[in-house]
Structure formats: structure tokens, C-alpha cells
Length: 220
Image (cartoon, rainbow, N blue to C red):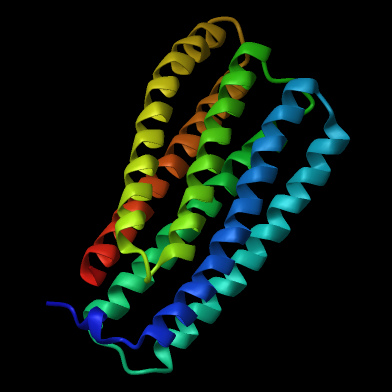
């Protein structure tokens, strides 16, 4: 059995307090990255540029918090299994922000063209669901380690959102393929990469939920 259950309650709360700050910053990244898609549908180049800068800065702040957590883990004696669980939690959450930054960068490259409204609106919906999942991860972090059973329920909700996004992706991909029949190759490639990055962010949210589920089970 992992010795996670033997870490003091105060230390657990401190670690998850730091992790909560990380999740909240990742949440800001996702929110701004989602809005990049919305503004690209409207064709607002200036606003897209401002939002891209917001995405970049929030992702940088999330990185700083990630490094602080990793430093905390390196400065104390932890059982290797415990350390591995927390490191995986932080790094996987950081991947969510990295994918949001990636789709925002692709969106900037799409300028000065505007996203087709039907495709853009659907991508915006997918990104909104990623944001919903990240907010749930924040709720789970607030509840750990005192209410592990509620964390398990939240993990299930995140998993359901990921499945919804998969279904939406299947539909939008068909529209992208139709669009590709008459569009520039560059636009076609960028649209698919934006779609894939949103889906990858969703997949990472489910991975984070799995890690939280594992930690919660060790705390029951």
C-alpha cells in the first residue's frame, strides 16, 4: 500500500492548496484560449492578439506554480509512490494548459482569415466543455483530502465530459473535411490541429481525474 495515507493532514492540505493555485491558473488559460476561438469566428484580429497574450502569460504563471510544487516535492522526504502520484497530477494538469496554448497559437496563425461559423462555434463549444472539466478539477482539489468520496464523483463527471467532447469532435471533423474540399491547404491543416489540440486537452483532463481518483481511493 502507498504511504500516502501517512502524510500528515496539514501537509496534504498544503500540497493541494498549491495544486489548487495551479489549477486556477490553468483555468484562466483555458478560458482565454476558448475566447480566442470565439474572436476568430468574429474576425477580430486585435482582440485575438490581446487574448493570445493573456493565454501566454497565464500559461507562464501556471508553469511557475508547477515548478514551485516540484521544488517542494524535491525538498522533502516522500515515499517514491507518493511523489510519483503528485508529480503526475501536476504535470498532467500542466499538459491541459499546454494544449490550450497550442490551439491558441494555431488560431493566431489562421489570421487574417475568419473561422467558418459552424466549425468555429462547435470548436468553441468543445473548448467550453474543457473549461467546465478544469473547473471540476479545481473543485476536486478543494475537496482533497478531506472528502475523497466527493472527489470520486467529480472524477466521474470529468470522464463524462470527455466522452461528450469525443462525440462532438466526430461531428465537427466531418464539417472540417467538407470545408477542406474547397479551402486552402494551410487553413484545412490549422483547423484540424486546433480541433486535435482541444480534444487532447480534454483527454488530459480525464487523465488528471484518474490521478485524483487514485489519490482519493488511498484516502478513504
